[in-house]
Image (cartoon, rainbow, N blue to C red; front, side, top):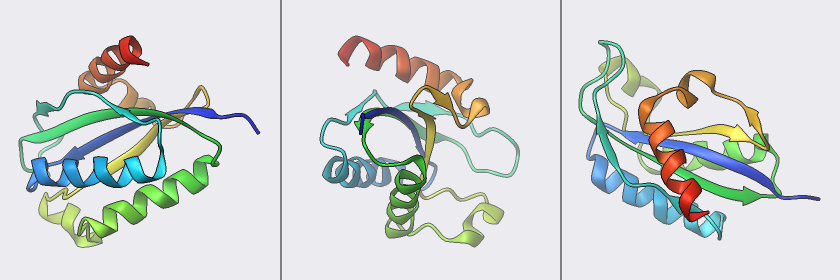
Length: 127
């Protein structure tokens, strides 16, 4: 089975520096070749969320299916304390989205965000 190129978007608006550090640590234990972009501070999209957010992009290769990767990402979010009711309160403790999997865009709106484009451009130079 071939390795698929994967791109993630990470974000948090609650204890964000700690949450992103936790996410990086957990992701590195699963995906050995993962690389991370610089962290960017962004304003929330929509009025339901508190600002600012800290966001980051990650890139890696995996033989796992998109479904299995998403399961692992959701588990990390739960370990970081994410609760279903948080979003309704404008809280995002940790959000990790699989944006691209094996050249397929899974989250087009996320891909178009400035922080994602900046992170991808930064990581292209390293990867």
